[in-house]
Length: 601
Ligand code: AMP
Figure (cartoon, helix red, strand yellow):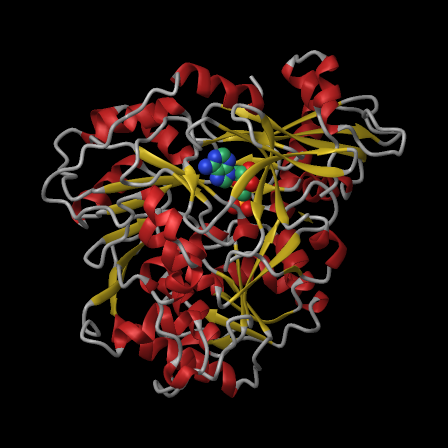
């Protein structure tokens, strides 16, 4: 079944069945209590009023909203961030502690001569230094780009180069494995700051030691005046063709992070919030770092990878109240069954949300039966910077639906006819999902790619590249991607990047990469190659190619399956027809191809 079929099938099978929220009397009422009324009266000015702004009217800085305004208030000594390490370590930071630590980072960057607007990259796992590096660099008005720590050297080099990295903060282990060999190719990377295993520090040639540098810095810092339109965050995302796209967000994005934290995640001041997303992706920044802190909520950072026992243990012991996770993890939990939950007391859990890939209706029904409450699916993407469509706490959840637009966001289904955009008013028709341009966390550029950025907009609408439909009650349903980009375990993967790495292998003449449906990961990356003359396909060559790709791209991006074909199908203009490869792999009629648009975004 294609994603497209699946989307429609969800709708049919679910029969628009509803799960009514069970609102226990002791729980706080949802922040978004009356969706229609709040949408009707919504004004962005009112959303901006949720924030303080820099003292003396000096503008808007994400780090001030996330940390300093709470640190300097009556809650300064309360826990803002609690970290649970892989080996059972625990570290807690109060708001005041976070303020001082991030002030030190900002001062340390200044002492290195790093200037506002320069790019600071963080290649880190889920450790608190990531929060310190990101928020400290934002205080210093640097542009921060978190990278996924499971990337191999090639995606790291591409992004550091395209993003013109001036500073990289990483761990000693990641540096030695992935970055050390790239230094000659990165002449503009002036500083690499290494976090060692412990506070004794590191002494690696050509790098600076985090603990020495930050430890010696002054804990006092005044954030310079910051225009809400000053660039703040850079996130790379993948298109079908060409290099990864660097989506640039500004400080004003914090308005959206704060608003959606309140409305879509229903955050209340005494919540314990856990976002399981990896720090290298946009969810890990917008909702793993900024949204909870900006809402004054204690955030949990859990270093361990997914393991149902560990995760259920965290939910129980830490008394997590709001949990934001992803469909792949939910499907893994479903596979294990509810046995693992026996005897656990998860009574603190109030709200559960999911993002990143289609959430099957079965998963919503399962969670309702297993946890006594449903997962609330929501939809957004790197370019939108924050949640755009959500199943809200006070609304009925329609299993399989992404929910309704966040107040202030206008979403529509559009089609393109004779080059013109047509907004589809009638329900039940699928088309491209579009958003009225202008919400605060909308990307402001694809760096160095003005034309590519411009092409995402038409007639005042931002075109998302996703296919969806809207039902008669205004709920949106995901239908599929309009392009060939792959979503595997929630990670967006550009086929071009994978194909390029495969083509570097001496035996490969051409490569075509598709997403192959998988019951747990959503999709897995599957590659087809044709070989250069003199090479013969064998099990040994397959293994060699898999190993080559894993080494260059990292395990999260490399193909899981590779097959050889005598030649790959191409369009007349010479582009590999990934859609045809996919139709053949899935045994779909090739006639279906007429409906498969060839999008070059
Ligand atoms: P990224 O930019 O990596 O966050 O990926 C964004 C893409 O993930 C979207 O354009 C969708 O294709 C997909 N996605 C995100 N959330 C959902 C969801 N709730 N349901 C279906 N697809 C989703």
